[in-house]
Length: 78
Image 1 (tube, rainbow, N blue to C red):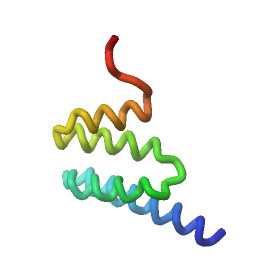
Image 2: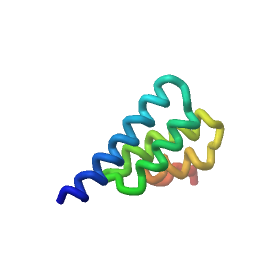
Image 3: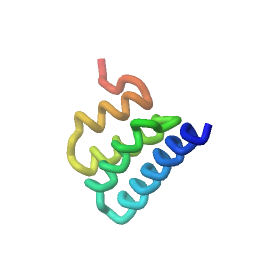
Image 4: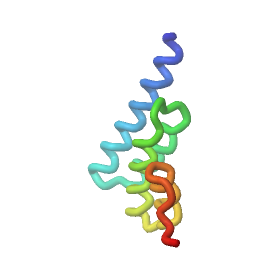
């Protein structure tokens, strides 16, 4: 139980470090923290949404779309 809880806490801590980096404008660092957070995150969808914002800021529209689609479903027009 302790090991499982530590993994979740570590993942959530990385997510929050990503939030802080994004807030101060260090988008590259935020991306690294969010990506690291995904490995053991108990609920990845909030991180996917944050990564979509990061990739939007970085100008990588395809990766932005990929993560937004994981959260909201398909976004392509028919």
